[in-house]
Image 1 (spheres, rainbow, N blue to C red):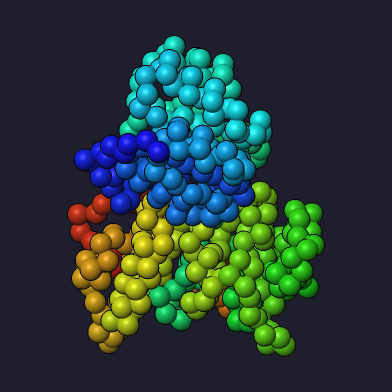
Image 2 (cartoon, rainbow, N blue to C red):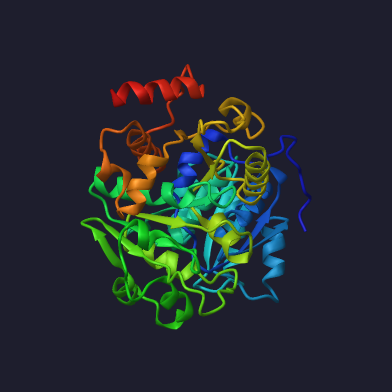
Length: 427
């Protein structure tokens, strides 16, 4: 085994904020086996963190300390995986010679990525000529690692996967489903883009009521018959709500027990992603294996809460857990709903957001008449009153969640200012 030299600069435990947009563009890695042989901790750490990233959930990664000599010795008796990542500080010509020895014990189908410490054009050309899949110059980031693996194993000609946006309430009854359905409708209307809304609350879902639909089939048929799921079958289960919006409705009945394995919805979501650029997931307020998996694998998470203490506690628990489970992603988004309810003591938006460390994506005022009329008529808010200030907030959310804009930092974020703006627009 080679002598190990450790870098003094430790890699950061999470991806820098500047790298998060680059991470968002990376697609999930298929089910492959990867082994890495590293000489320094500065390279080993980001590779190890890549193994914990949600985009690598299907891949199996193992990191060994030791470079080329360790790999050569290891593969004398062990089969080679789909991909070998090698770090080497050897000089260019010595590195080429060592790779010839490695080739003698590697399967021809195994891909090899070399992480070197020489920024040398001649070396790069020789390595590519030798059959190395990619050469990367250290130092490397987590985004570099997943990006290189993706470039090798993800088909660049394949249709891009749709963006998944998961909505969950901090408590029951906070309006998470209503927000989810209206944001989905807004995306489909504003951008003339296909959207699939999946109602994952099988016993008590309300999407069919909110969209005024009564489909005979829906998400239950998909989850209870996973062997039949493909794009053609899923298309038959979708109810067309408008020109660009389709609904995967819940049965909303209690004639069976809805217990599922942690990955029960994974295949359904992946197929839906191939069918539409945006997939809105209406996740019920429960915490079990499949809801946890759904949230961890989503591209965006939106937590809807009302400005009360129990909501703050639950939101804090959700945010902390999701940050731990998704260390390389942006934190969840926060929507404060039903704000300014008469005679109810409330936590101010600033005090609610401060312990969470996240800025609210939207602060939606309490307007039971507007929301109630929309729900009772099976219409979206934008269909009832396109000029309403709340519809404008929903539209702004649609822009942010699809990556078309960022949250605007407002000088006045108090509820009084928002309610004043709402009243002015109504005049």
